[in-house]
Length: 312
Ligand SMILES: Nc1ncnc2c1ncn2[C@@H]1O[C@H](COP(=O)(O)OP(=O)(O)OP(=O)(O)O)[C@@H](O)[C@H]1O
Ligand code: NI
Image (tube, rainbow, N blue to C red; front, side, top):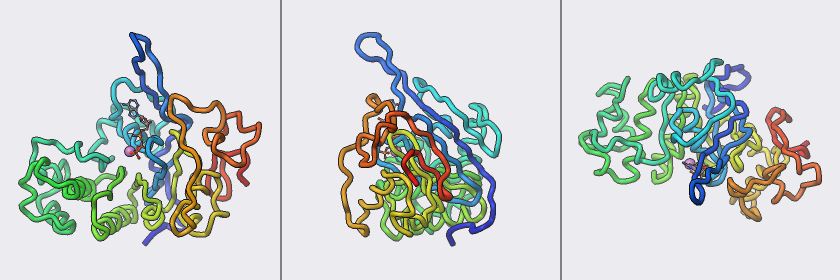
């Protein structure tokens, strides 16, 4: 069952004013800093699935990598990352990675090419019995455990990745697009498992393009745009209707859903190197005014949060 109802849960992860940039070489030896995440704030509570929705390039995977401390060397991270109320230092990230904090990576290339997949799934705190049971649930033959990643199809590899997180004892699970390539049935089984893990009190971050899937299983939805959060809403707000939502971009996403008339959003998300000075959504926003030339910040509104001065 979805939702912890009125029960007050503690924050497991707090991200405050996070920014991520990359040092890039331009022509010659000229160095340029490309900021891809800015002013990003979001939190994950114990017992919830927080879905992160946003178009391609909005910074979803980079956020996951920043939490795990696996960004490339030419990156720079600023802002506050707290895990169970304490600063998530580099050392802490190393200690917790793959144990207390597990990632279902977006790309199956994250599997170790030289290790049989059964052993990878057992990992640090699994067991042969658990691995066998989870493979069965995901329709993977017992013989798959002896295979190497290159022998798997895309869908099989994804089921292997999901199995790893599902049988781990991780308290926080970050699933980066866990369902593409899976049949509808297996996708639903997978999401059911994430729901069960959240109901046990764990925290789950579900990164997805699939808003319908997010709405069916998540408690809250964080909407990303150009490397920042523009709205955090309860999943039920999307079902209530467009008036329950807060940000013009979220409203546009809602209107673009097939069941709400499939109205496309004009324009596209700005490129990281060419962000507008003020509100990042302003160039596409029907409500923009002169005041939007200043960068807005997230503020609480009607039980959610929004980054727009016009939202009421
Ligand atoms: N190593 C890197 N160096 C420079 N820019 C990068 C690097 N990795 C990612 N980016 C840029 O950061 C932005 C966010 O990338 P990210 O992978 O987080 O997007 P995403 O929201 O996960 O997209 P998708 O839905 O396609 O997976 C993109 O514009 C991407 O080009
Ligand atoms: Ni991604």
